Amino acid sequence: MTAQLVETTSLWAAAHDVDARRPRSLQRQLGASDTVCERRAAYVLFGATPSDWSEKRAAILGTYIHEGLLGAARSEYGWLVEMAVADETIRGHIDAVQLDEATTARVPARHRPKVPAEHGVTVEDVKTKSTYLWDKVRRYGPSAAELRQVYLYADLLRTTGFEDRRGQRYLAKLGPLEVARIRFRFVNRDNGEEHVEEFAFDPNEATRARWWVQRVRELNSPEEGRRDFDGPGLDAICDHCPFMTACWGLPKSPGAAVQTVLIHDDADRTKALEEYVRGHELETEGKRMKGLARKKVDLSPAGVYGANELVWLGGNDVWAGDVQAMVDLHESAGLTVPMVPDEKAMVANLKAAGVAVPERKTGKVTSKTINVRAYKA
Image (cartoon, rainbow, N blue to C red):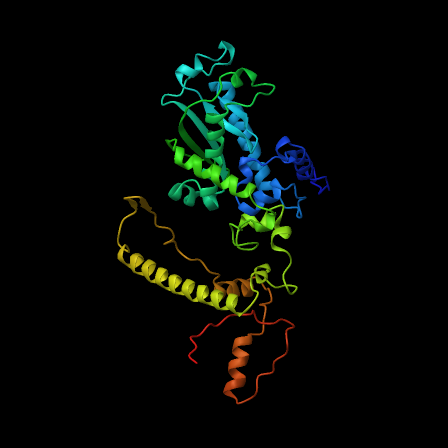
């Protein structure tokens, strides 16, 4: 049987179309998951039309994993998953809510979770991450935006309760619930590894999250909102934002970085160069610290030391083609040994003979570099 390449319609086209019809994609009210950036939240709040289409494969894969795991938790543990909460300012869907024993007893028997939460009502948020970000997740936990999102969910639950809507009206009758715990469950979408962080609910954090939303609602236009990230090419959040062009506009010159729109006068240039020099100093000091630490642990065995694990990689044999053995095999097999001009050797020969080395333009140009030097008038 001979395999043939057959052109077929990509499954991703269907996946993107289905994702675009999801209730969350069609939602127009500000959602807790929109609060990743102040200006982005403002665009949503003001009903702006998205200016950009972005590739969503990673996000869609995350959604599939998310729905599969939560669906399994619903079936096996009786968890309350994807429950809607809302008030007049914001809405959202909580990934999972685990009720304590007292609250569980107030739920109709057929809907009761199989195992009540041991330490009080717990709001859980599930996040899928790539291996590229996994070490950062394990080391630093949830980001500020992720914390703000889950605290908005939790605060909606404790101030208004579950939304009174089809499929969860029996929960809406419970009214506001006293949230005791917050849990983040990170799942590595490349290998399935799981990392859980849980802590007590902090009402001060909930208040800060509410203030953040209130500030956005007080803006007169989206452009008054703060950009919380550094822009396309520097932050993935911006690269995949549906309002990227509306937010940043186009660069002043084709091919230039879009961040050039941030420079309006010499004062801006002065500040940018000061930031560049400061960044260079921090980078230099960081390399020095890393270099010294690397030398100090050169003989240390792999293992866990405090909050960090030392793992040694490499140390394997390096293999390279045996040119002489290949020549011998060619000759013994009656094959012609390829004779390729050696550019470096020819350049060396011409220079040694005092002959100018011929050159031609390649049609390429060198990359543009920056050199910032101290200036004294």
